[in-house]
Length: 186
Image (cartoon, helix red, strand yellow):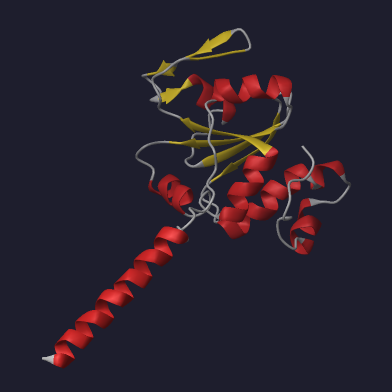
């Protein structure tokens, strides 16, 4: 009987220590990309110009969901994107209109796609697609398909750092050492 009471006391004490640990040092969620609407990103760009990273996706796209759970959930990639880009998550099949540059972009039922997605992807509808735009909204690059964090990291860094130098993409990719710990140029 004494053994049972002794074991119960140890279990209660251990439970209290474990509970105290989680109360005193809560688990911090890893950073994720802070997605904006297209209109919000354009508004913010007026006062703080940055490049745009637009994730064009659909609700039914399995690779889009995988990219959200892996690539955009990677703390280094998410931090770098948040610090250096206006990140936009754009559903290519959304029904809401988008006003931009004096034009209203709408969903086109016959195409089963939004006009803005058609425009961003030059009508080459592939999901997921990552679109990079300059601060003036001109196209830098469209990258169709899934990219894991290991492949995405040098890409997002290249469009910020590599574009300002004469280095080519193959050379940049070959010499890429990782994302910097602090934000870089905008």
